[in-house]
Length: 181
Image (cartoon, rainbow, N blue to C red):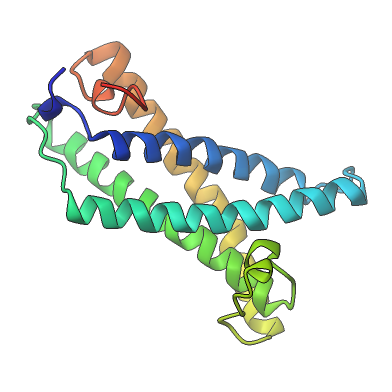
């Protein structure tokens, strides 16, 4: 395929890297709040979740900046108006929640007075004040946001499967493979 039919390599790589990390974060987030999980495992999961969240925030910022600086110039694919609208809204929702989730996680942790080990090691101070009310509000948004992003991911995966398996119209191929041509 020519470059006009594919996203650029950086966009494809960050898409798939973030997909793996976000799905992993959803699993970790679910496991770390289970009563049956032992304290030492919970501590490991919480530390992992916080620090991977920082990485995801950096990746989504880089991805948005890259997309703004290098807008995709792909050959059009004919789609019904409702599918175009659904795709647009799903992508807006995904980008929105890819920002909301690490930001609310950061606010919940820092306002709650907890460390983010990677940032602490680098000497980066908290950018939010210590506040139980703020931490609780961010926790609620973060919790329900996990269901929203999971639903958006499911919609995105379903559409990708539909285009890749049923329609075979080249839309899935635009983002695959993650590396290479």
